[in-house]
Length: 434
Ligand code: GLY
Ligand code: MN
Ligand code: MN
Image 1 (cartoon, helix red, strand yellow):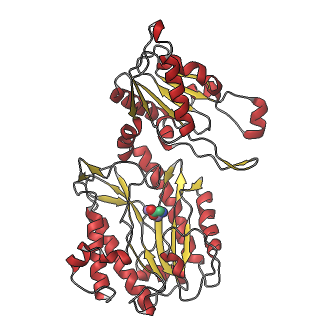
Image 2 (cartoon, rainbow, N blue to C red; image 1 turned 45 degrees about the vertical axis):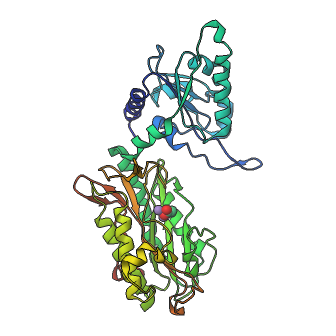
Image 3 (tube, rainbow, N blue to C red; image 1 turned 90 degrees about the vertical axis):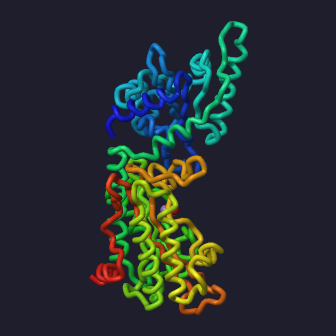
């Protein structure tokens, strides 16, 4: 992504701040065990403002500061350490590559930060995410307070910067859409591959390996979340990630997996029969979920409110459940009393972006938010008939179906970013048997 884009974002934030100071740390490195850390992934808000990929970094925005408004605290170059841990941008790189106006060693932050806080009325921060950093920030403010007699004043107000940033992050800019498209493209290839290689007798983790092979091969640095590779009744466990069961002939398969590309997530689900041929029950449930998904996508339009796709999906699902005699009664009543929640217990989507469940308010002044061009979201209805479901004929037991796509709202309607994976019964059977 272009470094001017990040400079522009920072200017936009500073204009909203009107004079305060903003302080945003990246994520801490988390230890996994002894000498092994979890792979580092930057904090999304920090990365949104800087594109700086290294750990141990903090960005500070100081509107009006004479020696530069954007300061990046980061690790210095250290040839000895770089032999072990890899290249660092260093202070020079922070300015030249990432467009900071000024950069200081992260070790010096405690000495420098109180000075930056002096005479600033408000501190804009992403408080509550990293308690250790929050404590340091309070300590720096206290240090400024203790100098009150010298005539300096300490900030009197803390403002939640997340809210400002998240409103900006909700509307994706063209470069962000490019990243989302790339994440989707890689993930589409992965889902297609999984459908093609799936056979009874394989293990769920073997399919996971095929997905992750495509993610890496396509330049997707990480899965955006732990892939759900669930066969048979495991598909009815919504956050199943054990991925260690054998694929049985006659079972359904549910794969919910998406790659992350430059910190932008894809989030895609497909359901298909392990043996490549839908049974009558599998097909019946699948067709209901597909109809619900298509109806929901149809209503992802600028000007519609956030909940409309969900409402559409629920109507179609309930009609389908009544037709299949899995629910009895009147549609509106079943919806009002939430009887369908036995088989459909989650919502139909969420914002999608740098975080798979991305930021942004769903309601504004207590009303569902209106959809606008540039927003991206998932549409992911499902039906889950757990084994042992009471008052449900056994032939339905253990079938879990979800279909999830990633949608960009455009001026004229929407664009399905995750297209290209078979979705109808015929398409799925064709690719699996092709
Ligand atoms: N993969 C999590 C979700 O679909 O929301
Ligand atoms: Mn998903
Ligand atoms: Mn999702």
